[in-house]
Figure: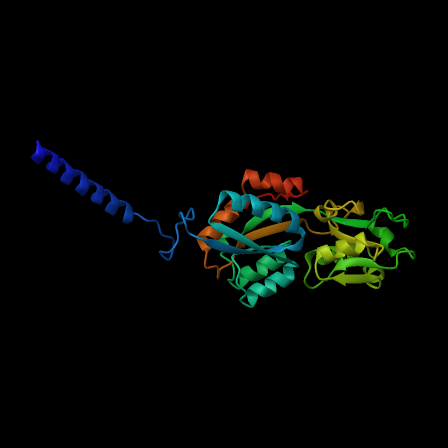
Length: 276
């Protein structure tokens, strides 16, 4: 009996060691043998840096909380600014994993320089260009054409060279034949949220922002949407930066942004899913 017990103990011990060895040799690895393609392994910590257009501030802050809660090994760090400024940061080698632009122009420029992982880039969201005034405004503006009126002294716009909202605004006013008049009254901001703040505080008589920006506050009101055909559709493309050191985790978060769960949050803030 004692011999049988010793034999059983030896068999169980070798079986346990064999199982442990098998588990240890089956760990996942990514493209460079460092990270699992689909998930962060237990105990692993990954920090993703996302450069996102300023108009995404509120919605992305909410998505950050949601994602980090369900992915405890991942920390998301968002940097918000005008899309042109973010493009420049990537071109100059600033650390970044994901770029979400408020226009296709900046994304296309980065793709042409091979600074994005092209197979990850795609259209994510759509927005609208709107004219806003302070909630207590007495100017009586009802259309983009009204901006040329004499009682409109200051117009808030994003910088034409680096802020897509400013570029869209110039296109709209140019199509209406009044850009020269508007430009003389323009006060240019570094991003669309700066313009929103000016209108909220009545520092300008009106401003051009995205509809989603206007929805974040009751201190402004939308008086008009950009006339149909006066500018291109406002498309937000997103993709993984080519220099990302966390490519697999970045792709996983990008997939999440395209999920039904995330899209419901985007829609709550006024965004629309972009057509494929």
